[in-house]
Every structure is written in C-alpha cells, then in structure tokens.
Length: 293
Length: 319
Image (cartoon, rainbow over all chains, first blue to last red; front, side):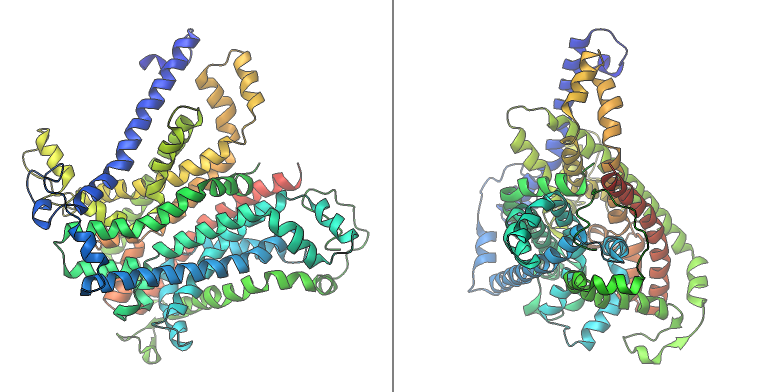
C-alpha cells in the first residue's frame, strides 16, 4: 500500500492493485463506523434493563427479549398508547406534507424550467436561498404567527412550516428533471391541439415521475425527522410527533436504555425502508438535476 | 415571448427593442400562476419572520411572550453580545464544529464514492448500508451515540478499557475537552453519506472516454483521478461543501439532544446557544440580535453558494 502513494513509480499493475486494496480497507473501516452504532442499538434493544447496564458490557445479550418492543407496541399500557399515538401523528404530518409539497413544487419547478417571465432568476434564487436560513431565526416569529393563525398545538402548523422549508430543494430537484425533458415533445402536443396545461399534464408529468418520487422521499424523510419546530409548536402530549415524543418520554425515564434503543429503531424503520426501496430515483434525480454539467 | 423562446440553451435572437418591464410582466401573467403557490407560502413563512426578527433585535423584552411590553433599546443587544465572553467561546466552537464536520464528512464521502465506483460483489448492499445514517432521525442518532458514549456502560469506553488503552471508562461527553470532538464524530457519521451520494452522482457524469484516453496515454490511477476525475467534479464538490457547511452551521439536534450545550458551554454552538437564550432564559431581544448576526454570516456564505450554483447554470445556458 505504501507504494501506492508514490504516483511516479513505474510498475502500473502493482500500483492499481494497491489502490484497490486501499479502497477495500477504507470501505471496511467505513462499514464498521457506519454499522456498529446501528448494531449496538439493535443488540441493546433486545436486552433487559438489567443486562444493558453491566460492566463490562454483555457483547451479545445472554437472554434476548422482545419486552421493550412489546411494551412500546402494546395499546393496553400507557407507554404503548403514547408511542403508537406519536407514530400515527408523525405518519399523518409527513404524509400530508409530502402530498402538498409535490402539488406545489411541480408547477413551480416546471415554470422555472420552461418559462422566461421577468423576475424568474430572482425568484429562483430566493427559493434556493431559503436553504441558507437557520431554523432558529424563524422559531419565535413563526410561533407568534402560528398563534395569530390559531395553529399552535395543531398539526397544521407543522405541515405549513415543513412545506415551506422542504420546497426549495424539491423545486431544485424537479427543475433539473424538467430541463431534461425535450421541449419538442410539448410543442408536438401543442401542434396537435393540446393547450399548454394539457401538454404539461399528459406529456411532461408522466415523464417526470422519477423526479416526483425523489421529491416525495425527500419531503417525507425531512418531515418525519424534524425536531425543532415540533418541539416548539406542540405542547400537548397527544399531538407530539415521534422525535419530540421520544425525547420527552426518555427525559423522564433516563435509564431505560433498551426501551430508548427500541424506540429509536422503530422510529428509523419507516424512513430507512422507504429510502432503500426508492433510492435509485433519488440518486438519479441528483445526477440529472443537481450535478449536471 | 415566453413559450416561443424555448428551453434553456436555445439560441437567443438579438431583440431589436426590449418591451417595457410592465408589458413583459403582463404578457407573462399566466406564467406567474405556476409559481404563485410557492411564492405565497414563502412570503408568509419566510419574509415575515425575517422582518420580525430584525425588528425585535432592537428591543428589550420582558420574559414570557408578552411582547407588547417590549422597550426600544437601540443597538444595546448587539453590544451586549459582542462584549460577552460566552459569545466568543461559542463562536470558536461553531467554527471548529463547522469546519471539522464539513471537511471530514466531505473527504470520507468523496473517498467512499470513489471506492464504491468500481463494481464488485456486494457493492449495492454496502452502498445502502453506508447511506442509512443519513436517513435515520437525528434524534435517534443522538440517542444511539449518547448511549455508546455513556460514562458507565458505554461500549466505546468499554472497548478501550478491554484493549488496555485506558484504565477506566473515559467520560466523553461530560468532559470539556472531549465533548466537541465526540459530537463531531456523531455529526460526521450522519453527514458523510450526503457527500457520498452527491459525488457518486457526479462520478456518473465523468465521460468514460476521457478516462480511457488517459489510460492509453499511460496515466497512473492517481494521475487519472487528479487530472480527469477531480477537475470534472469540482462543480459538484463546491456545491456539496457549501451545502454541508450551511447544514453544519445551522445544526442543532445532535448537540442539543446529547449535551444541551454543556458542560459549561463546551459544546454550545450558535444555534443551540440562541435557542437556549430564547426558550430557556426567555431573552427574546438578545436572541433576535444573535439571529440577525447569524443571518448576516449565513447570507455571506449564501452569496458564494449562489455564485457556485449560477456558475453551473451559466454552463448549462451557454454550452
């Protein structure tokens, strides 16, 4: 491997082999770094509270138990009731946000890609600049705004906020897709008598499905994982979303590490599954939209 | 005017006389309908809060959100911030946090993308596993690492004891010297996959012929990377670094959940500090002034961001 560092060395075949080995060792290291915390989360979640708190730790649980999962998923006991309610709240907020984000981002991205209206450049950068604003700037004024709109302690406040904050990247991703759909397709449809909106609906929309899926994943994951606004706008226990709910719950039960790890695991499952199923669309959207040369 | 001009890249005929702005806008009136929903939502949720924060930063506010009783104090909030020791400590923390997280996450992501570019058995599975930390909730990630750093039962300390590196469990996140690096490790864990995805996407745009030509000309693997791939990815790299830098500068959840900024402000960065000032100590005016300062810094970063993006756009418009 040391020979690989010297690019001037003459023997080509040896050098390429060296890079390959360096790559493998590096990937093995990254795999450990990435996977060990997740493995430890799973192993802890199937221990009893007593087994989790031992020194030296039990590397492998001697008596694996699903008690933590049973407790969290049991609608009869109060912990389970809370957890399931948080779960449904998160699912509701994320799903509605996703649907609205796609509905708003599709026409906007299409317009930014196709039309040349005055102010288009400025508007587009205004949209992108949103990425730059730190959430904290918005907390107090948005809280007051939500109070004024009567939305404090409703899921509407979160949906409105997430929608706005998810839009910039959503529009950016989708614009890249529309840029790549040949304009001639629409022109042909227009010549055949379709209105501009019909051409958009029947020609462009179906072609941009992968971009829409990528946008939807992005919105859903963002909304599912958001913490700071949910912690500020919601105070009633029965409305909390998962990240805030779990944080509130475990700030009272500080030593239930198996329960905490089981809750973290179940909070991660929906977004991880969703992402793994649809990741090819996401990478493709980035390739076509964001990083095109 | 609008639709006939065609997509980006169509040659522009020189216009003899530009119609007035208002008549242009009138001609394009239907186009605005498409962006109207986005603009309305943005105006409500972005423009108003920005105005409000700037306004509030010049007032002394009573605790609680009884903001009707606020008193105008001019720039007093700003001078109070700039002359406090905590401000400079938190600023140093923020710089360390942002620079270290951004650079290391970028380098690890870049290297992972390169190592995963060549096909081998299990590549898809490995790639999927490496992306997962980016997808899972930051709250979950914070709890997982907090548990691994635990001062009595944490696995990292236990491994170090077993290997004989230390005598007793080190206290990673209750120690002013180790807390910030420990949290940066967590942050990088969450963020390097983003850099990896961006670079992986970028690598697909590097033309294969160029690499083959370089190989034919006898370029080594390193030379092919340094003279072909690396320059080709400079645009993506710039955007990725800027996005990471902004995200890190604005990050909140990891330090807030794991330490709450402690011990003795050692892991406070700007955002957590502002949050504590506002919602913990209810000093809304000071927090607003902090936000404005932060806003100015972020806007100057944003200037480079827009420059980098519009650089890409110009390349698209005139190939």
